Image 1 (cartoon, rainbow, N blue to C red):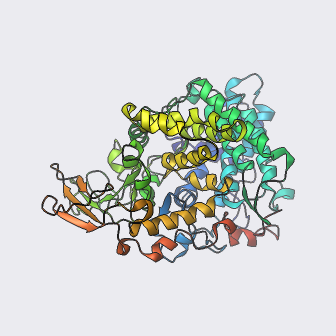
Image 2: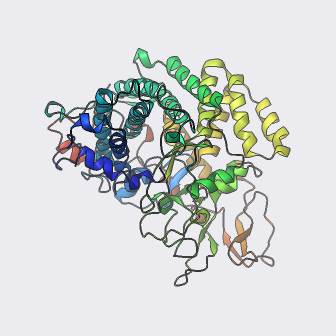
Image 3: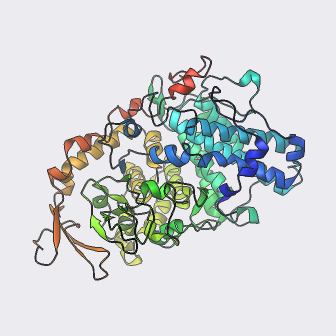
Length: 595
C-alpha cells in the first residue's frame, strides 16, 4: 500500500474524467462503468476508493497550493518571505482576494476537494447498494474509508472557506449548482459519518488494511471526529462576527463530550502511542516510515515523484548537494522568538527550530555545508532532506507525505476537552505524558511534576495552549486551534510584540545575545554556535571564525514583523471563494458568510 497514489489511476478510470471547466466544481459527474459491477467486486471497489485520494496529488491541489499556504501565519509559524507584496503571500497574511492569481484557477484546491468528494459520494452510494457491507468486512472497510476520506476533504473545505456547498450525494443535473450551506449542517453530517465509519474501520494493525498509515484506521477516524467536534463546538467567524454556533445540536458541552470520549477511546485502545524520542518521530517521518501503530495516525500519501512537503518546508538547501538533488526548502519557518519560548532542555526545541541553511556548494554535489540564517529566517527542523533514506532527484517534488494527524494531538485534544468538562486537574495527565516525552527523565521533577503541580484554574488552559504551540509548531494545526479558542488575533498581536521585544532585547527576551558566533565543526559540514542561548554574551571572536548580528533591530525590521498579518485576522479567518467559481456558479455562490 506504500505510496498509494501510484495506483490511484485505477480509481480515476473507474470514476471517469472531470467535467468541463465551465462546471464550477470540476468534479466527475458520473461513473463510466455500471456501479453494480464495480462495487460488487472487491478489487474494483478498492480501486475506486483509492481513486478518492487522487485529487490530493494534483498540481494545484494539496500538493502545490493548499498545504504550502493554509496554516500560515500563526503565533508560531510564518512564511519566511511574507514581506513580499505579491498574491502568493496575501494567502497567508489574511489579505487574500477572490482573484488571487495563485488560486483563481479551475483546477485549484477548491475544485480538487470537490472532485475528491464526488468520487467519495459515488463510492459510498455504490458500496451501500452493491457492496454487501453488512456481511463482507472488507467491503465494509472500504465504505468506512470512503466516508472518512470525504470527511477529510470537507474538514479542509470548512476550515478554509467556512460555509461551503454541501454535497453528500453524487451530482445530478438538478444539483449541479448549489449555494453555500451552513457549516453547521456539514459538521453534523461529518460527525455522523465518522461515527458510522468507526464501527467498520479496524484499529491500527488489526487487519492488513490498517497496517499502513497511508490508509485510514479507527484511531484516525476517532481522532478526526474529535477534531471536528472541537471545531464545531468552538468559535469561528460568522456574518455577524466571531462567536459560537447557535445550533443546539452543536452546543459546546455536547461537542466537547464527543471529543473527549473519542480521544479516550484511542488512548485506551493502546493501538497508537507517542514515539519514545521526539527526534526519532521526525526521522521516521522523513524516512517515509508508514508503519501503523506508532505516533502517526494518518498521512496524505504522495508518490515518490509527487508531493512538495520538503520542497516547501524542509531546512533550505541553496544548491544541489550530497543530500538532495533539488535546491529547495525554507519557504516557512518558526517565528523568531519561538526558539526562546522552549526550555533549553526541551528536546523539541532543536528538532523544531533550526537557525541554519545548507549553503550553495554548486557545481559540486558530493558535499554539503551549513551556514547561519538571519534572525528572521528560522527553518522547520522537523523536515530535512538530510534525514531521508534516499537522495531526492526530482526537480519539483520530493515524495514525502503530509502527516495529517498524530497521537500527540489526541493527548492535547483530550486535555482541552477534559479541562472544559471536568476541570483543570482532569487535563493534567494528558499534558504530563506530552511533557515527559519532551524532557529527559532527570528533568521530570522540575519540568513535569513541579510545573504541572504549580498550575491551577485558567493557568491550566493557558498551559494547554502553550503546549500545543511547542508540540505542533510547523505542522499547520495551530490556526484552526486559535480560531476555535477565539485567540487568533490576540495571539498574533502577542507574537508581533514578542518580535519587537526580541529585537530590542527587552521583556522576556532581555538576555538574548545580540551577536551570534559560529564555526564549522571538525566534520567541515555542520555548525557550532555561541550566542544562540540566552546569556551567551561573551566576546568569542578568538574562538569562532565568524559572527553575525543577531537580536538587533536591523535583523528584524518593522515591515517584516507587521506582515504576520495585513488584514484583520478575525475578519479574515477564511479565504474567499475564488472568482472563477463564483462566475461559474449560475449565480449561486457569493462571498457572504451565512448567519
